[in-house]
Length: 295
Length: 190
Image 1 (cartoon, each protein chain N blue to C red):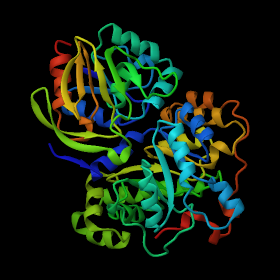
Image 2: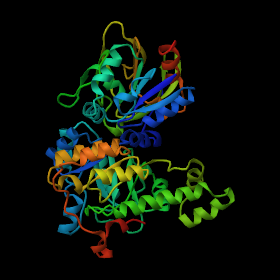
Image 3: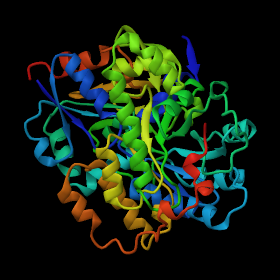
Image 4: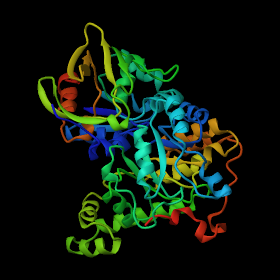
């Protein structure tokens, strides 16, 4: 009996199991437990949520292994953790902790401004951010088993996530309408491998699961992204920077499942208390926008 | 035959597709009203804690329990196996299941994601390629539960009456053998 671990199929398959779910940022075991009890399909363990990274500044790095392990012990759902773009040693360390998914994330300070991690070298699957189809396909070519559209993390402003979901969706639709002999130039323009471009043109979707992230703060935001074609959502600062995290977390889980049912969305949006205060993306100077990290 | 696929969270679209490829119509089930005229139900892979949480919050818990008790054929893969088990080990505190299958299931028994694997196995006498993702296994089976496949010395596919459960995900492969077994052997006559 041949038995294989770390294959593309089990890495991508893991993301399939998360679909229709909400992955929540948590900074300690208590928050992780609240997220699990609210119905999160996974948690992202990190030291500071993006809103605090933004407020405090400085270099943001992978989390303390101690803190990640405490979260792993506290919950039974999958635990993800972030590493800096290009920091393959942080990834080796996180993999050794048997974390379920690694997020090579622009929310942390990049370690390499040219290259991303060669993700084929790892047994643990990776999720990466993308602002457009070319970026998504470059990450998949490097071994990413899941893509999340980028938004502007830590803002509570969903407009960037919207832009990137529209861009990725629009570029996919454009490929499906092209003649075969036009796909070579399309690959050149997207700066993506021809084989992946052809696959997307044929299937009309990415070869991996597509979540969305960045700026999602309300059940309505989550449902908006689902109606835009996301397979699921990441919610970062939006939950634990709000007035009533447990209730808001549960409401976002319900909104992600019943994203097409305005009555349910109205019901779960009632009496949630204060949403995170938020920052308008347009008020953030360009060099400080996280979504623009990654190449 | 009209197949319902519980669509609260997880890879329900893949089960809809597999059901259609077997020649049946398939509908996504999120509400009690969508349960009423189905001939069979599939509980997909996903996060069992999330799915049961949503089922309890949207008045599906008791209706699905009742449907199982009244003999509706149900197939659960991975999280679906956990949801069909009468007893679970390593669940979260107070984690409920729909139950009906007289087995004890250990959640995440094969380990974390780095231990997820694919492997060949024998299912009901047929060779197939199985994908296990943070998969459970069956720890104990009561008399009357038929073991259809084993891996790592544990049952990973079981049947009792109209209920079928697998630790692995046939919906992630092109092989329709498990779905056909469910439709042709368990649902026959419906």
